[in-house]
Length: 35
Image (tube, rainbow, N blue to C red; front, side):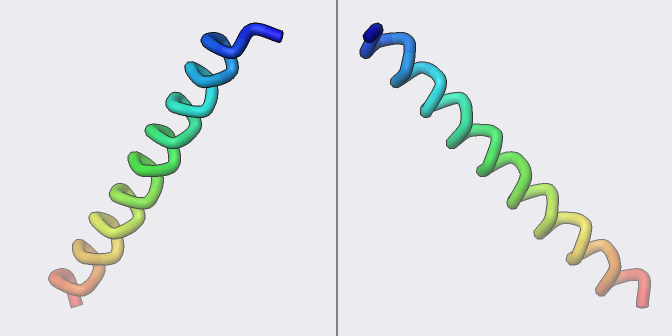
């Protein structure tokens, strides 16, 4: 097992999740301002 490689994947997944949730918050905030 390559521990370095798996930790890289975990970090990438975590970063992707953060980006996804931040974009969700941004889109919901835009909807509030439009209404």
